[in-house]
Length: 239
Image (tube, one colour):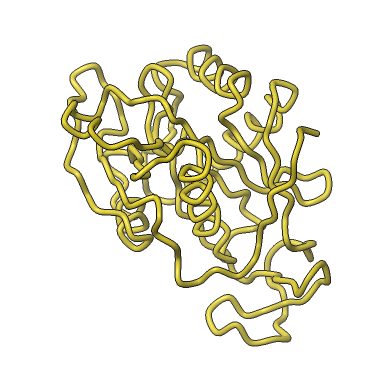
């Protein structure tokens, strides 16, 4: 879901989430930092202490319920944020869930784990998205979908680091030049998030079929955030 949905692509597939504070680590030790200044110690006002870095693993079909729970919890939160994003699945729940399951089967979805808790997820799709004009196919790209951050982990910069990881891994695994995303058409805060993460607006795709994520964004796959804090470590294998 966060950013957008079309055949094989989700409806609004990348989200920007904020939190009140963040727990950041040195190595595998717990430390609490002010997310704005980086100063420590800082009293956590939201959520529980977290083991950082989170373990980023390739997900499998066995993780379907974990991903769906993240979708449902994020959708509920979005309804409090003055947006119609994910007010209902597009085009319906059965089709949405089948897209999620298919991406899990095809090895496109990753989950960041805090112990047994699914803290965040991202789907990295190397298959061309028909919502993008053919002229853009001249350069290899990957398409970001369902970038979701569980609310207690918001505010630490986890979304930015997942995007950085997606860019680096897409260059390594798919020789991608570009990273692209389809954002919920009416969610202007999400559009601002993308531009703040180095993406450039590429206009809107045809949404005559009711496709709700027509706003297109891209950035070079080689782009790296200036706020990298070591919140993730990629580990091999599935759970």
